Length: 176
Image (cartoon, rainbow, N blue to C red; front, side, top):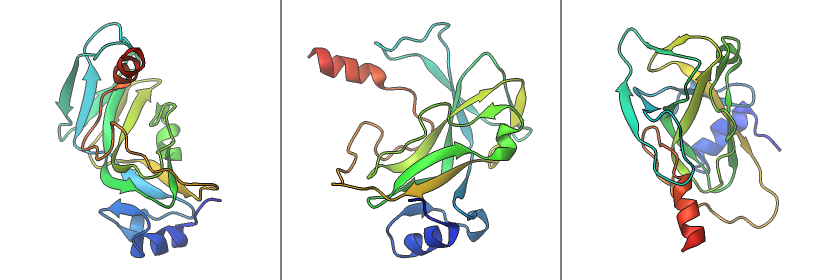
């Protein structure tokens, strides 16, 4: 079951979900808008590898914005810290960003219950798109879980800023 906007506001006031900073203007009928933070991460290798750490660079978004090109994946982060031990956050692109041909959360839209931090946006544009720090590109919805709750305690817990992939750490654990 999805929370409505007014219920998101109530649950935030009760401390059952984290949205910091919280702005009433960002509450929508069944979601909360999320803004893009001030930096992007771009991988520097031509070929990315799931079994090793991939080189990347951090790019401050200039005042005039930054142009996303179609041949790359960029990582950004929400300004907001979000999470909940009671609800499952799901991140999606806002329709205005999608109508520009921009994917904000390419495929990993589910945030584990118990995870709290700035969420990493996986930004991909189908044609060049200029983005600016503070743009409200994404939205988060909150869903009630059913069954026994096991809280997330993984490698991205407490994330600050865009987080590059750590999938190679999973492989290392499996082979140890």
